[in-house]
Image (cartoon, one colour):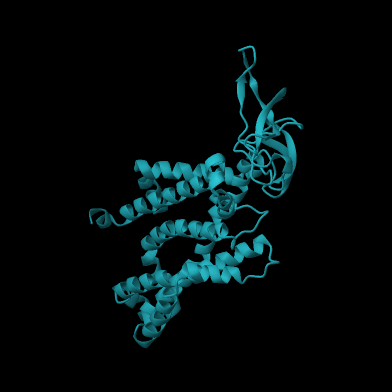
Length: 355
């Protein structure tokens, strides 16, 4: 089924583009330590808000040259009363590929120093400029994306088993059990989820590490999102629980739990696949929103949300547009997931496309 589904996705032009884009994003995030010119702890306070480095391939004599760049030098403009950066053309710094740079652990295990692109020891290569603390925005985008792009999947691993089992039990037993369980689920659904996230995130201890805060956000997202999913599963279970294959399983003495897990819940596979694909973008946005408000992943650790927070200032939007890059990536990722989810829904339920 999965193989056939992928073939159908690949036939759709927009879904194919979305798959390629997401594939490239996750590939870059997986090998972020190697692709990034700097490690996640790099910071040069003298290079705050430096614009993206300019890469030259033509030398001063008009001849083709190896790619090189110049460092920026910091100066104070007395007329406009602001700090400006100009190119220091006294020394070239050649761009190097697969060269040694800052040490790191590849995939968190193998000590390495090779980077995809870097420059010499005295040079600075900021492909997307720097932030207020002189940290390379391009490198932080890769490291921050690991959190922003995985939190949705981790939440689903908690949310969907709970929702499937809860909805399956409610629909299978029906009667008072169904009534009580659904009233509880509706009570959970009535809670304004984003405001609850803000309240819960704000009361977390300030001394928590970003990893602990990350895991708690995952749990919070899952615990407030299972109810709506369980309600739909319950409706699907009601429509199949009286079919012949269920009656046959009862007649051979199968337990209720086994019938629910082995025979009934697999009938909801199509809906589960669609729901999972369409749910990931909402969790990406939730995490980004919390981090943007300062209630999610905390500095100095990066996520696309807390990186975007720096771009909310008017002066940064006008004079430092490279700080808006995390927002653009969030938009691209959410759009790609939605395109894939819509295509999967059309493939698994052709009637929905007609409607």
